[in-house]
Image 1 (cartoon, rainbow, N blue to C red):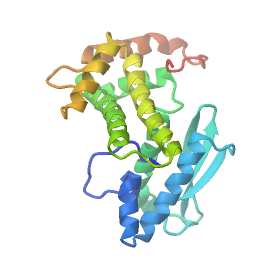
Image 2: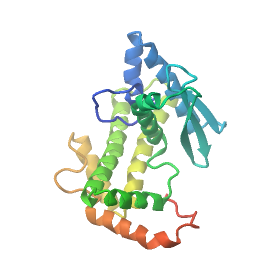
Image 3: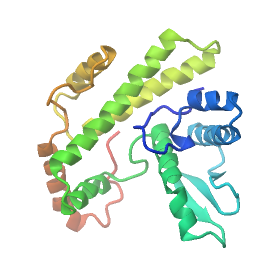
Image 4: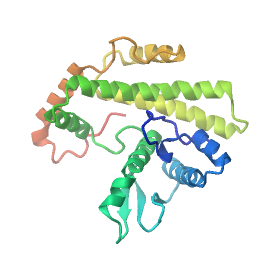
Length: 253
């Protein structure tokens, strides 16, 4: 069962939540008890997001369960993550947990797509805020293109995994295939949201590049440009004065 569909760039200190289930299983085989604990927690979150009827799930992330834990709450189509702390939990403890919290968040997003539950205008507002903080439109576009490339890369990786090492259980084969298609859908969703022209053409070329072992978007060409980011920021600024009562402005499906 593939619990970690999205790999993350290596860091100086990688938390267990940034590992794939296969990597965790390797650590468990070497007697790593913490890896076993995290894999069980990952499995709980996976099943919660993909089908549990209970709208709430609590997961422990601290070595002492009463110090800090995460509460997942399903709200409509998406699940949200909240941090709960114990009465004796210190700021230092939360800071120490921060890298792990970010990886849990990334894991949740890998299960249900980018910006889960966020409104369309909230995403564009984020671009405007980043620009106000002196992040260029080109840099924002680069980040978005990397995100799309990551989702498309996972699509290719999962399909290759099915061909190379098909699971003996047909249910697991269907699950891996579903992950492949979901990652493809997430990548397309970003491109559609940003108003990328010839979306299908970009995706087709990117998948071909990835299958050939090349970057999704080779050279300087990439679907999301600084011009598109600027257009979405202008779109948000035009909408902003009247958006307070707009609760139907959600990302296109």
